[in-house]
Amino acid sequence: MATPSSRFGELPTFELPTCLDFLKLKNFPLKTFPAVNEPERPVQDTLFIYGPGYRNSEASFDVECLIIQVYLKFCGIEYQVYNINEPESSPSGKLPFLATVSGAVYDSRQTIHWVKETRKMDKELESNMDKEQAKAFIALVENKLNAALLFSMWMEPLNNSEITNKYYFGHIPVPVNKALAFQKQNEVVQTLLTDRDILVREEVKKRERERERDYFNYAAQTLESLSVKLGEHQYFFNSSEPTYIDAVVFSYLHCILSMPKIVDGQFTDEEKRQASTLSKLVRKQENLVKYAKHIFEHYIRNDQK
Image (cartoon, rainbow, N blue to C red; front, side, top):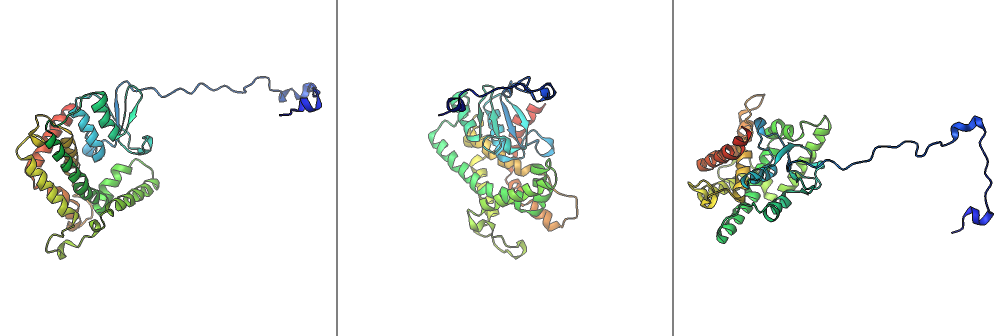
């Protein structure tokens, strides 16, 4: 490529007069900034979650976070919890995520893989038949019970305004928190609409029989199935120690049972009744309540002491 020197020869130079010295770049660069260093690696594996939980508990109020939180405890992995409440800080845009001392960052699925393949500390059922049945029960919980929990948290007006929005977005200034809450509620609606009948709910007073596709009916059936399968055992499939299915089932039960009961405010008895519908369904299964309490006391509360 031709340059000015090659085309026109050496260009003339001249000195600026003293009065224009201020235009000279005596030092270059003009300003030197300190080097940008990588963030310090954690000194301990750290799980970033929504928290603290209801009543300032260590257990997250978010079911996805709690599943990973309690599963790591089941596996005996030492880690610290960081209540961040900002999903945008995660590489995947969702919480939870695990930052390890090696510098690696894992989402939920990757964390389970990391526990199994890297740490060799995963907890599994021994029988292949039990493993397959456990997968079926987990799918049932993540489909039917999850839908009921989403509806109870985000679509029941009382729970949504007095509990869910405050815990997920209460740390964000107005009006941004309102916009984010509205956006999240729309996302939940789209999730529930994958089964279009799931949002079809008649007034309780007009409903004389359970609707076949009523999401609370599905939740009740799921809870009954779980209750029968658990029986009087301490953990599912009579395992000697908790496994991944216990992490999933416990997390859903705890998030439902620990949600604060609304007693104050100018709310009707019907509004309060609807807000506690799912919790009442769980409390009908006494062995599930006992099961959830045992895991909380042994793996969550003991660690807080």
